Image (tube, rainbow, N blue to C red; front, side):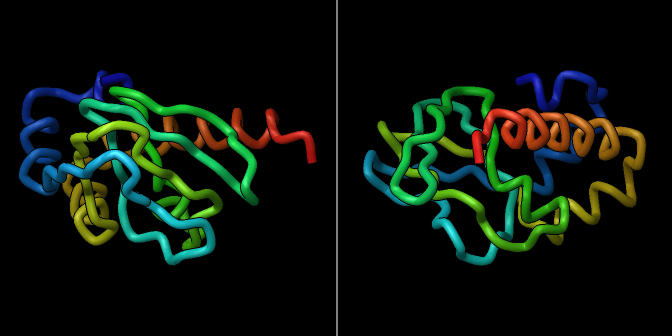
Length: 128
């Protein structure tokens, strides 16, 4: 997965130990717009749609992630993410991400940069 591609085997083990796996059915709201953000989600299998204000923004699939805005300090979800099919997710709570940051500062910086790059791309694509 691109988000984790720069991590070493030890760093990947740390991510695994600090993450949970979750399965959701098609139609499940994974993150609600305006709700408090609390975790980073990475799609392992399946697909999801991203909407804001009722408008479809994008489709997500394996390797895509969401919820990063909460981990970058915004605190509130800026879009709704809904499972378009059954999905398998890797979920890392914000508190566990902080542990990862302290233990692997270089790797967490690389992950945060990937998240910030994606956020910047989405802001540039927003016509408002």
